[in-house]
Amino acid sequence: MRLRAVVHAGEIHRDENGPFGEAIDLACRLLDAPRLKKCLRASSSPLVLAVSEDIYWGIVKHGYDGICPAAYRPDLRVSVASRRRQGFVHVPQEPSGTREDRTMAVA
Image (tube, rainbow, N blue to C red):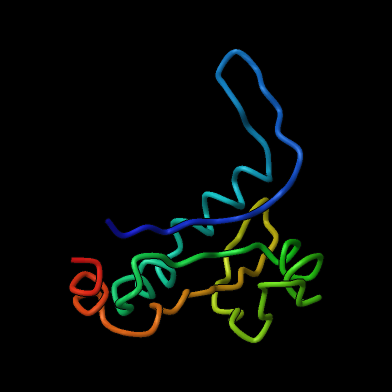
């Protein structure tokens, strides 16, 4: 399985048609960005993660335990509500050793 994921936070509204709002629009546009899809195709990692600029500047850049800000690249640009927004891409690295090596070690 290969996965694109996005992290964003914001206000969500709901009506008879379901949830809506700029926060959902931004998350969906980041998730569907051609550059994020290309990044997943080019990577051997099963996951690529996009975070919104709000998440990057509010959380990632501070380098809390387990988060390396240098591992996030400002590679995404999308438009939402006539405004250009930025997304940051992180591709988690495979643990040391190949997948085959880890499978053989378990057996």
